[in-house]
Length: 410
Image (cartoon, rainbow, N blue to C red; front, side):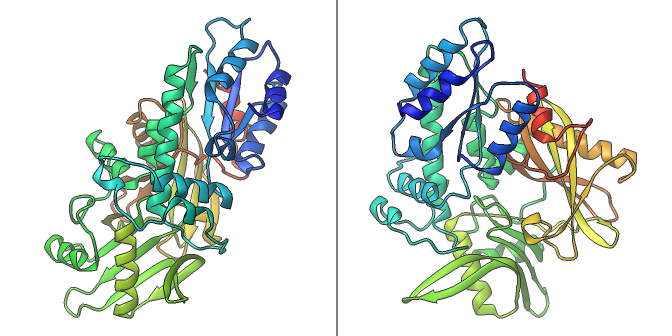
């Protein structure tokens, strides 16, 4: 075990329940949680970097043993482990892509996507905004999550996950997530064809014609922060198309590169739309009916509803003049308080979000993205984000999201 990590463990108070964060040091979520623990008088959480796990410089069994040793005065209290976001770190991203190159799985959905060897993954250049092998990245993350879960199961120390790694793997795949929600009776947008059956642009057109869904949202199954999302519509009579998306395309040394432009682009030419849709489908796509969003102050909106330990707390509306509301596109945010929405609708949003997280029986915290349909007022769940608690300037009962979580530890 790395010496610095050993000292961080020993620095934790022997009278406190040990709390471990697996994440990227310096990440805003990690810093926010540590600040909350300090404010509430809790000892600092031990931070285990993803990079150490991926380089195998940490032996998890030894780590769990040492953490359990400092909590001996608290008999029966488990080590709490929080998985934090693995993103915003190019080296970790490449390591996960490399892990994905070596991952063998019988699951058909994990065999999709373009691929590179592990050695090639580690040599990938840093190109700002480029979307690098998302299918292979996901395979690598699933491999890591499975190893973490197995190490915890084999440990003699009592361990409690904030979110079970198996649940996180499902949440990160929009297709599997929506399938689980639907099976649990949680309302989700309808599909034009069975999940995973649309493999390219041609099969998309066939699904559009058979389902008569001429307006669809097409998403990278493993994308986040509006990366790889397309609001697509096709005129049923003329066949003309519009695709509004963050995806940009460049030619470099004879290779097509796809990147997150950070702003919306509007494509109408058939060749580019086909190119982008083919790529998204190869990497793995979630394709669903385009639900027209309700509006506030003349802007369409959806809601990020945080759920902690089975109860709704912080909520933020994301407002946009476009079909895509993600805050990474510099859309407006509006804190949901009493009076922002009609009371009945607010309660419906909260109840539906709670039911969405309840479908994941091993998890206690998630940011749930909720759609309210224009005119009809129906509520749908479009995403469950295991790391969706980074909500700036949001308070619930006088606490920010991390203070609330740390004050409600179980």
